[in-house]
Length: 214
Image (cartoon, rainbow, N blue to C red; front, side, top):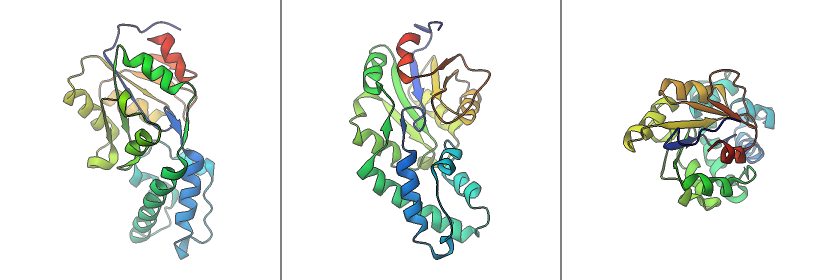
């Protein structure tokens, strides 16, 4: 693995599939939400369905999962899932990838660390609260704040914090495309939910390989 030491001044992270895996918790939370809507009585939420939409914006998720619903029904289901997700995640959390805190501690000595995710408002904060992660990250941005696409949110972090040489770490093609659109190099986390075959400056198979890279 080629070293990227001294190449960048900051690292921006995706959340789901990069820092933690909350798939099982979200699957249960969304199923509980669907059970509250009579017209969704036959819908079964599975881990595979949740993984299939990881990285998409909250609006697009429900368009893809439930194209047969009316706009009003889809909005109701989205709201039910949003509330249930944060409630159940607050109790159960997600699974941190191995050696996360240790690796972030190491990286934080020489790099500014941030999070940009396509999640709803409150989701990153919940991750930070549950696992005492606030001290590692200088700021974060998400889709739920302004309804902007990930590329715009990456750009906001870069501009707002005057980053000169940032790099983005994510696990899906959508992450790569967003970083590229924002003009930020990309590191592919292959242990996550997606596939990126070309264009990344590096690929990591475990989160703690970032210590070798940097």
